[in-house]
Image (cartoon, rainbow, N blue to C red; front, side):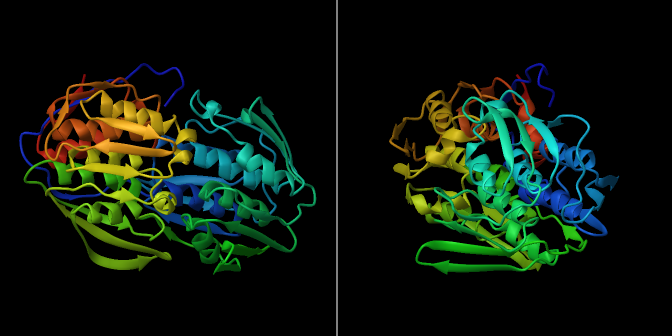
Length: 449
């Protein structure tokens, strides 16, 4: 979405009929970013099917082209990447604009750190507020130099290492983005790069590295999960089938749980166990949610999610679950708003450095629609209604696509319609969100405000 695009307010109200049918959500964003990046580093042409064609991923595709890879769209969701091999990326002629994507920006820091080239990266107003020191700090040890605005913020310039050194780094907090940036940098280094994470985070990078032929060892130890990567492998092009994004599936899934009479199937959803914390939490809350047609595709578990409306009850979500559902807390808060009792979500410090201060913004979303919520330290407490949500509010989305979608899902289940001030950024991760929800509802439940 262009930085100066006009606001796109939307409003959601109770649908005329329960949500039903079988639907496909867009491809997994995390896997899509990585497929393009690893394709650019591989020898040969990588064929990708099911690529998410949202704005965030298209920014990554453009960056890979600027760095010398040939990236072509062959049809809807069908792409090819002719790679340049490890260490083969070229200096870009212009600034790399990553739009709204923190994942793309942080992973790209790692990729650029290992190449002896100079480049400059920027993003939209939201991304330029987000901290990058968490990646530039450890990546400096590889021999790369970074220059940022005050507070480690974009725009950012990087001079990659001429002779990159392998890293041995313990993450201070669990972050798949930082882990992946370190591993991407380690691809160009001689020797073994070692990363220790205190809690397991999504492991798409490790899975894809193996898929392309790298040697990756993972071991759970007393100090945490240890990932070791042998540097300077020859990555070979490999086909990738991108499953549906579980973070995107969360929105129609929760809508079906909350709209009376709903019965919905979401086909071909990625079920990586390090991404399914929301599904586990909803089941603990009493959700009728089952998996059909479970299978493994491209090293990733996949299946069809079948969800049926039913009552929910409050739970306490442990802090160690946060890495497996860090993007799903706003929509979980909407489910908690309709549950019976007080749901406590613990250990959400990471939400403060997302597209917005997602912790404060989620509490504000609830309060604007008649739900009592409060923040205690890094915990969010939500007083559920045990039934219908009052609704009737207008939510400030702060350029955050997940807040916008969560608010609109709330509107489908509320007594009064819920509006958002700007839904334009939904396209960065879930193109066609409103259209899919309206198809499931059999009518115009989400409309222009």
